[in-house]
Image (cartoon, rainbow, N blue to C red; front, side, top):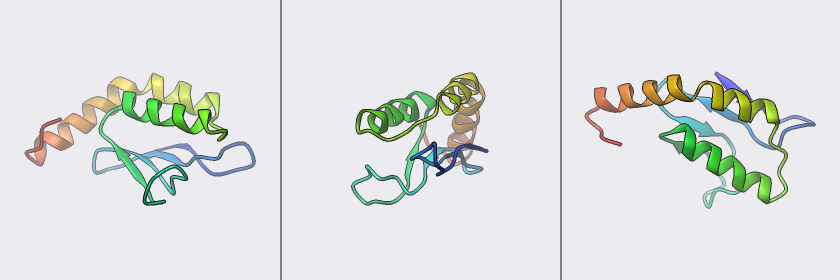
Length: 88
């Protein structure tokens, strides 16, 4: 599910992956200038705060939808990690 896409009003592209992470696609503040993956909604929200502090446009809609879906996303991420034998 996409929470934000690059547009005239958004400098970030954020989505929830089927593999169990939240992804900042084409992240402009990533050291590798690639995508960043996060294993919790809190970490993604913190990351988006860094984007905003750097002057990137992050929509209130993206932030509110991530906050609203926090429990479901975090549960899914934990389930996927457990299925792979990973711990968070």
